[in-house]
Length: 102
Image 1 (cartoon, helix red, strand yellow):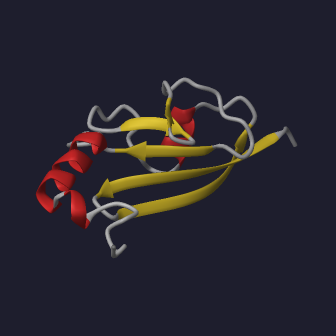
Image 2: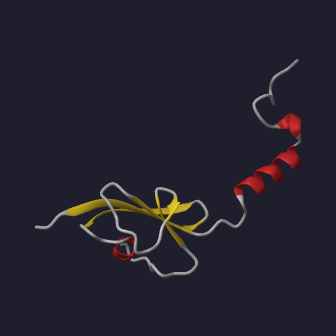
């Protein structure tokens, strides 16, 4: 029997909804192979692939212990969302010193 790699595939189809699969695949398999093994459409243009949070191409080779992530692109830049929240709440309601009294 040939060598195999153990990987985990995590997919996010909707906000706050994830599915996870633990797979044993043949050595030399790609991200697309792992996604197809889970029944996901690897070439879906609405999703992006990553390994441990870093964007990768679908033909990237997997190593044992990799976590393949199949995610929708962000609608809002997290930095922009944080700035908007901060502006709404005001400087005294957020941060490390919000509860400190003088």
